[in-house]
Length: 362
Ligand code: GDP
View 1 (cartoon, rainbow, N blue to C red):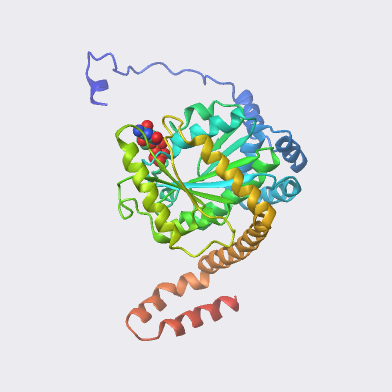
View 2 (cartoon, protein in one colour):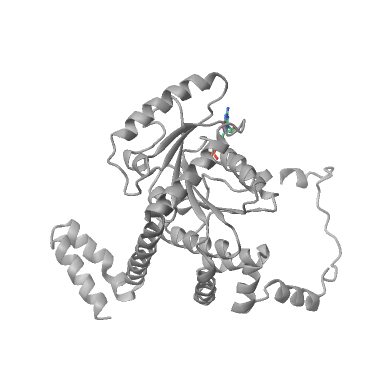
């Protein structure tokens, strides 16, 4: 800015003469309305089913929108797509920043699209809830896969609570499946509660780890390890190879201490190098084995049914909660009651009871 003020600077801004608007307002209006063309539900559904990515993206944008009319259209699209959804393998992928998630997704993505699969990559980024910034960072990641015509990458919805973001991602899965994507990856950062949300919407949960970084350092809690159907120790290359082999043995032992999973599947530990494309094929075969085994023993289907039920209750809970905290008479009194609780004038239970009764009489 300072530069532009200097008299001799080439960046100096001269005041020019008034110009007529550079765009014809009528044309601009027409362009705007064309850009915002609202498709009918049938157009959306047909577009999605024929694999039209622009329409798929627009429909996902409706899912992500907070506007009630967008939500209504989105729900109708989802409803209409539901019969065509479900025919896929949904894989959750988690691990701390820097573990190699995007490198891995590119490597596995290239491998499976090369085999004729169609891959959609969705993300849940818990960081965007708190700050504007995102840990996953969307722009420069997975450039190869972004240009791959058999892959579709959709960054994490930016706004909303984790619950809200997770619901939107789950709904987006349905649309991606209806658009013919047979493999869905849901990526998240292994630092918060988002793993539980991802676990509740996928068939297979993959934990990426590094050798020698220590569990605490990697922020991996016992509960997350317990959810994993496979642990892949990444960066098993160069000097790191031996350490990775050693870590593999340790994690194998650790997993033995967990009670057997309901799926009847024994979680696997593998070493991979996403960078060198090593172990990627083996990992994919592990996922396919899981699908085969759990399809035969009935768990695959039963788990999806459980998840569908879970999301129904989850949505009820969230909507009730949102409605409660948006209620004006509650908002008017919330702080005051909170203070009474802090000052021990009333008990927490009494306060909650009072507010709930007030809400229910709304
Ligand atoms: P993310 O934050 O989990 O998505 O991690 P990235 O995929 O961005 O990888 C972080 C860094 O680790 C990058 O510099 C990658 O090149 C590097 N990296 C990823 N995978 C491997 C691997 O298998 N071996 C080695 N040596 N480096 C890797």
